Amino acid sequence: MSKSRRAFLADTAGALAGISLLPRTLDLAPVRLVEPVRVGLIGAGRQGRAIITELQKLPDVTIGAVCDTSPSRLSSAQARAPGSQAVEDFRAVLDMEDIPAVFVATPTHLHREIVEAAIAAERHVYCEAPVAATVEDCQAIAGAAGASSRVVHAGFQARSNPVYRRAQPLFQTELGNLISMGGHYHHKTSWRFPSTEADGAAAVNWRLDPEVSIGLAGEIGSHQLDVALWFRGTSPSSAHGAGGVRFHRDGRKVPDTVHVDVAWDDGPSFHYEATLANSFGGRYEVFHGSNAAIKLADSHGWLFKEVDAPTQGWEVYATRQQFFQDEGIILVADATKLAAQGRLKDGVGLPYPSLYYALADFLKSVTEGTPVACTAAEGVRSTIVGILANQAVISGSSMDLSILE
Image (cartoon, rainbow, N blue to C red; front, side, top):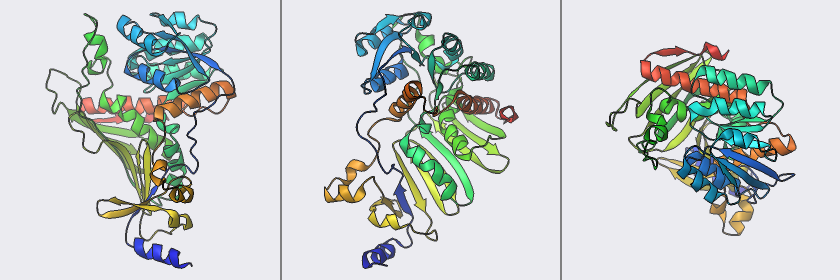
């Protein structure tokens, strides 16, 4: 063993090592498709506008049409996508023969009709996640997608995120015995938005309408629960929940704070907490094992190894990062080269948002026939878990998830 190797091991003994989960190679150049493609956007709210922003980073993509029932949102979307045609009826987008692929970014409870119509019109479909607001609608979408030869991609972004894709195999190889799993979402916001139309307040604030909303557990939690379902590769058996309005006492009935436990028969539960009343801690998922822990936070991820776990040779090239009482080490792509250039920090984090990678994966599936990163069936499964978890929160009881079998 070299002197530098011995010194490194001595310096890090007794500390948890936080190893960056960035991919070994991460291209900063935009994704190129094998051929240009024109796409349509249905739903031009906040998520629709975010989709426009990320699509414009893909040089082979042209936004041919934008659609929304709100004149103000439609005008804003068209301004962001110059040259696009603006229409208020989604069927007009499906009638455009030069648009083979559409993105559905309407409120969750409106997805089913649009997705089914798009599939029937033989369009490739990217459906924002969660996929639908009821179990029945989820099953209908899964059935339509399963009978179609077109690409139907569910927008659970973690499955396209390079950090999470790097972490997924480590879940099997590095953790040892799985001890616990959890997810955390803290974001102080009201979920209430002003409307630019006189009669549009209810439509804009659909997340606060208990008749259609699937709450924090469904709208946000399904994304983080999807990580656990993907990593474990099996379906949970039950969900128990609780929650209430802890801060935003404005007459709402949809809880602003929830706690959920989703259980597997063959292992530990996934404990999830979310609130709109506090921002501390942000958003992350964590998986604890007997040999290591994995923490994932969108653009960043770390593998924390126990002191008695085997040390890998590549750890010699890592830099250090302090995590409260534990000293972690960070690995980045091409670490030795970046260090020589004084640019180590340039390799920390992702160059693009998670949404970018999900949209690029969908379009590569459309143009190249690559495997779908998150199929409709996978998206429906995670969405149903979120829907039933929300029902558990509302009822304060346990929900049977055997429907997933």
